[in-house]
Image 1 (cartoon, one colour):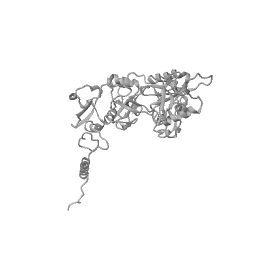
Image 2 (tube, helix red, strand yellow):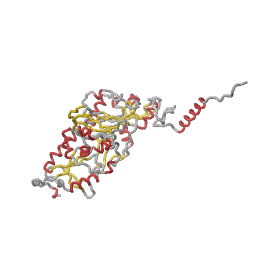
Image 3 (cartoon, one colour):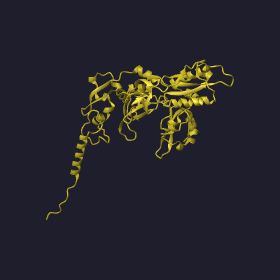
Image 4 (spheres, one colour):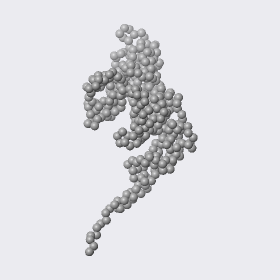
Length: 438
């Protein structure tokens, strides 16, 4: 449209342009407008392009931003920015570069251009923490305020119990210690006395972090490489629960900026039935539940386009995440087809299905042992009970081995358990005294 072509601005009247970052593609485009169906129309962010120009302080841009977020309610895959028309090319490149290789300075520059999401009362629901219970004055002393978090769109995220996506430079005195200027991510946790306490996540510089046991799990060389290159372990690990001490199956991920390790229980996570309008097949669900990265085709994004993308469970994001380009490239360079096996026998001789662990990939099927296999989702309880001797509330009275895919006693087994318990109670019941015989 000719009215959207850039014209040299008069002094003091330069207009703004809106930029959209597609996080999966790592590409920035300039907003041209919307079509009749309400789909977003974009063009390359080059000088003289046919993109929409708006007054910097006008109502049009506010209305456009509100309409954008109303139309694209799921904007996790998109980010909106604004800049001067004359700086469109350099800012678009800076946003793309920082998305691929984030740095503290790049984060600050792009956050200054980011368009915050309009306040929506509905988005405030589901908070894990009450903002009123947070000691904002103490946080302010090191350089973080509630307004800062709102401007960077991290406020809702940290209130829901997640770690901030952005980094913040903190410094000053806190708790009797002086904190040198450093870049951190922020999260909160609830102390035993009910107070909400901030936690600062600094960059971990320890090169041997992955070489030491993590809650009892020792990373193989392959697992160390995978965590460093993709951010996710790529399989299910068994760790010792820090609270209960029991062995639990978990997804493990590494924060791509702070390098912290985080875990999420695999037996508590439920795979969604669909992603971006595309049904997740049983094979894809099994791969997700085993910690694998999965390529999904024809995903229907809110901007009206259909694309393929790699997804994987992330303990940092507490669910499925779209893998960034660098992680996908690392995955493709070192990826081997996932080796699935069936008919492996557990400790009680019952067959189960699963995925061969990275260290045993390439073994011929007849040489793969049970220890080389991560059980498929439907076989986890079976293997835990039959091989590892573990129990839960449903299986703690079970004396017989669980069958393939079984996660609780059958009706017949429950009936047998109840009869056994009744006999035990009768045997323990003291006999009635008949008195002294004269």
